[in-house]
Length: 180
Ligand SMILES: CCCCCCCC/C=C\CCCCCCCC(=O)SCCNC(=O)CCNC(=O)[C@H](O)C(C)(C)COP(=O)(O)OP(=O)(O)OC[C@H]1O[C@@H](n2cnc3c(N)ncnc32)[C@H](O)[C@@H]1OP(=O)(O)O
Picture 1 (cartoon, rainbow, N blue to C red):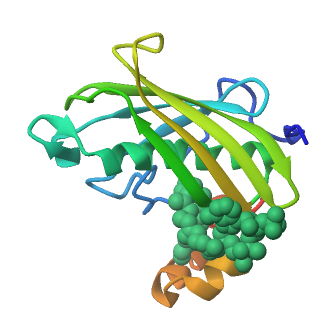
Picture 2 (tube, protein in one colour):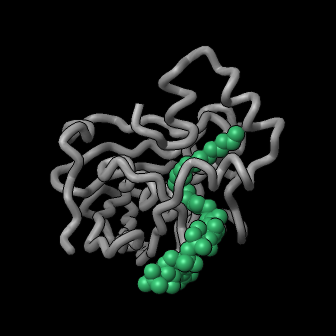
């Protein structure tokens, strides 16, 4: 089935914000994290930007492929916020098309292409040198819808307690990507 944008999804252009401040992909409290910022776009699409830092190197002066895969995974994961579905990555297939130097900005675009029961199919592309620049990375992903219990049953109790103790109800809800 074609994906359906949730009626309460953030408006196109709106920043989605971090879903969890300790998230390696988007959290503000991870010093070496990607600090990726995703924005809602039209339909079930997002755009995102990630600046490659020296802490993200694999080879001298070049981004590590696993870090680039993380940027793709995070961008693709943020799409589920537009569906208002809690989902985790089941499969992520990545093409590394050209090397990405330190200090470059990776301009990402992602969209959900189909939904089948709990399965959410999506695709992403990352460019360097500008939003219209050459393609550096691509990915196709399958996310699987889960219940909030997935995190409660599998997460470490200390971190779960810390999130639940946060007086900010929106932050608490977003850590589990639950519709507040
Ligand atoms: C205090 C702490 C607070 C923390 C809060 C954090 C909350 C974060 C909130 C939200 C995240 C948003 C973050 C976005 C960015 C990051 C995204 C990530 O990196 S997520 C992490 C990496 N991923 C995993 O850790 C999944 C590990 N895997 C699993 O847990 C299971 O395998 C799971 C849930 C994916 C599926 O297990 P089943 O038992 O529920 O379901 P089955 O029956 O196996 O699969 C359902 C359907 O999906 C297909 N499927 C499953 N895995 C597949 C695969 N790898 N390839 C192809 N198909 C697959 C199956 O064939 C089946 O299909 P058929 O219904 O039969 O048609």
